[in-house]
Image (cartoon, rainbow, N blue to C red; front, side, top):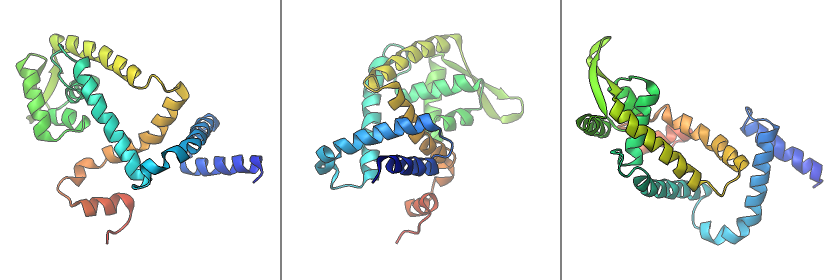
Amino acid sequence: MNKAVELITEWGNFDAQHPESNLEDFCRYYLINKSEKENKARHSAKWSAVTIDFALMRLINRIVKLHSIYAIAATEGTGINTSEEFSLMNAIHSMGEPRKTEAIYAALFELSTGTDMLSRFKKIGYIIEYDDKEDRRSKRLRITPKGLKALLVCKKRMAQLAEMEFFDLSEDEKKICIQLLNNVDMKFSAVWQSHKGKAFEAIYAEMVGATSE
């Protein structure tokens, strides 16, 4: 195939899948995809037993586990003990003074898990709870000066952790990773609460648009 035709075909396929993207996004994608194709032969045996979706899921899962391990070291001594606790405290801070349930769900936790974390934060003086003036049945959260001081230390260290984890990627590679995975985050963040209690087969059929056999 003529090189120009091949490039235009690649651009057309990319644009169809990512209509919000621009030419710079395509160039980053094309270079990364080209590199992946060149390395495919060396890794084909490793992934031959699984689908590409499963391989991607496994890779992301391993990165998340490794991140959690290093996050414990990064947050040591702050009173915010894990990446999960950091995400909850960060959600409270970014949302202002949210309702308890709003903060818990924004950080993607089940209500019981999030409540336990908030109870510990309240006990060590990192947050306070107060009645919601609009709904007396609800509680709102506020980070205390002590909690904010700990959170800011954590933010600095977690930023350093992120820098360390992705140090070997170029800025363009990082941007294309964010672009490609951001839609997955938005898609599932919007519906995960509605899936609680449903059978996996029903969730799969809803999200993939297929009926399981």
